[in-house]
Image 1 (tube, rainbow, N blue to C red):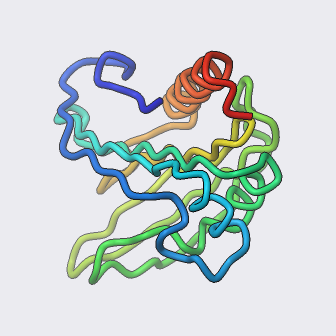
Image 2: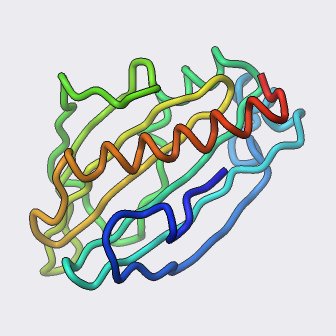
Length: 171
């Protein structure tokens, strides 16, 4: 269900990493996480980098047990997103008025962060298709992303999930 280099706009993308783990394993105390764990599904993520312009992209899919659980993850999961050690969030701002085709009620926000002497930016889109939540996060040291670039990537991710749900009946 994850995007690949072939799905990304422009040229010069490299895949940096790919990983996965059992859904719910990190927070079995929460009912939604416990239900997700019981499905046997896996969270998957890929990280990419583009040299020109110099920026990063993080794509994650989070299968949940129900569409309500996936919606809960979108609304409340941002605070639990794993950040790198030594990174301090300086500012966060929810962005209104941006639509992501095919995604109902996405959560969209920007944040700035610092790590030692570096200052960076994240542009984030958290959405869901049926029972699958997904996160698309663009990062850069400067103003490396625009919403007009990130929204089509989130739309492509949503379409991949929707196609998989239609075939496998994950709802």
